[in-house]
Length: 269
Image (cartoon, rainbow, N blue to C red; front, side, top):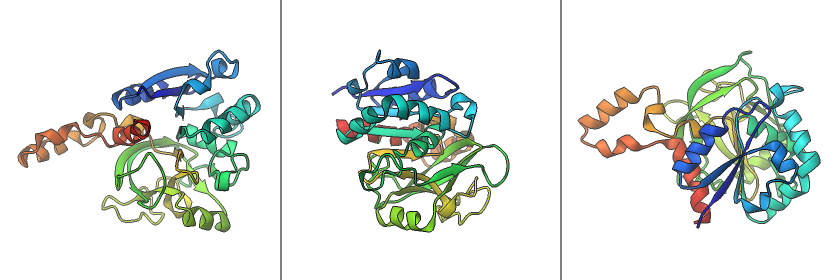
């Protein structure tokens, strides 16, 4: 089966080519589509199985990251996106895409409510843009399709408004339903407990990514598409030498971000 992936482009989104490349490596058939073509009906969302809100700075983050994109897409495509989800398809939001999904209300999508805004992604506590590599710890009890079989991964971040925030009641609901998918962690895999720079933005409860109650809508601040080959990792030369000395050269091809995308593709296969 061919898994068709629609990756949004245009108006300041700048990770579409990298995301398309990574999904192609994961075995999908990606198509970069300008938002206007989707809004205008030139491209039909029904022809795809995965919709990706990628990273970048949509509309220059005017009025807040992902705000203008969310308004435009809700106005023109709100019912179509909800129908897309209800038919069993997948939605992935990465960085700016996560911010857009939150502003749309597609996340957290508690109990099938894909309209109400319950959580926020706000300015980093450190006061500046963060471009770094961090470690994630995944929730094994989460229904998230994209993280099945994965305990965690190292992955790059690049954002200025990545602090996840929600009130105590919403946090309890998300935790009870297993919707907190990814948390920032120490290099050992232990919880970051808010410690900077391991939690790079001050996110409440170290939250880096959440899903809806079905596990088919997933948003995260880090960029899995940017870890599509082992040489993407800043420490790949040392890793390569360590692996060679252990006589396990085959492990050199591992790219943890690619595995996350492949889980989404394999869901339909």
